[in-house]
Image (cartoon, rainbow, N blue to C red):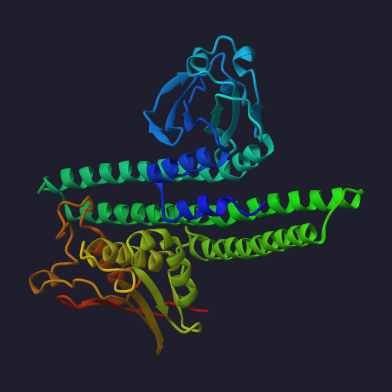
Length: 445
């Protein structure tokens, strides 16, 4: 078997949320030649399911909700693939939906969350008996974990948005009370910064999980194909006839499979190292030595899909030995806001390609301090706005759902905790540069 999943994986590139679910369901339905294919989210009480994306013979269908009682879906109770290659209606005579759709074959598997709990189901339905059960089962085993990761990521993003909206509403209500004391304002600011930090941690974990799922899925696919090739070789060793061209073909498949596994497992390993570099000991509140190039590269990995979706090229120009004693999670929080700000504001819908849109983070070592610069070649900031960008609630894009607090949080982190400085240079049509100094805060011996 050559790699029929390449097209599926390429089709999923840079997709997330509903677009991801629609793409993978359509690709799977076409690859396995089923009549129906769908992803369903199970209710908390496990009594019903609602489809998140459903396709019938290449055409998207309206989502439905159905009871699980007396259906094969109710019996998909473990991590294995459940198969009825024929006569499924005879096995489940009380399933009226199967009868109405004239279903003969059924293949389904559960979608398990990170905690091992069942999130939902991946199901294929056939009007005719299923002829290639092994192939379909292999595809379902490969992609079920990837789909589960995307379901959790999407729901986490929705929950983070809900919390952010609630926080914005809370801030709006608080600002209407002009009699609030200075001490209460300071406490609210500290609480807001802490919430923002934890939100940044959640975003990078979700982003890394999204990035890691693809290389892991490819490695699993390659392992499955390699195993099939080994089974073929074992059959020949047992006396089955073979030709030189057949042997060469199987060896080539094995070589391609092992190369794919090695490349993608290395990529997953690198992402794991980067994730550890970012979120290790996030609750520590003492300075520690930070290699800025490694930290910035690790953070950039978590923005990979977002930058690609926005068609923005991302470059790092920091010598590997630039280091400073500081608070790593706060530096990460600053860079997260600056990248978010550049992605949202620097490049309006101007028709530029990724070759034209660029964000560059550079750095250098000084005496008892380090310098970081985040620069883009975007639209720039108008002179009347540049002196206000660090003000709380100031935003030039009221149609967007930002709170106008991101750069204000950045400014306060430098003024207080990081004990450094940040300034901005910008020219309309030529881009913006944020120049930051990070002094050494090495604890006394």
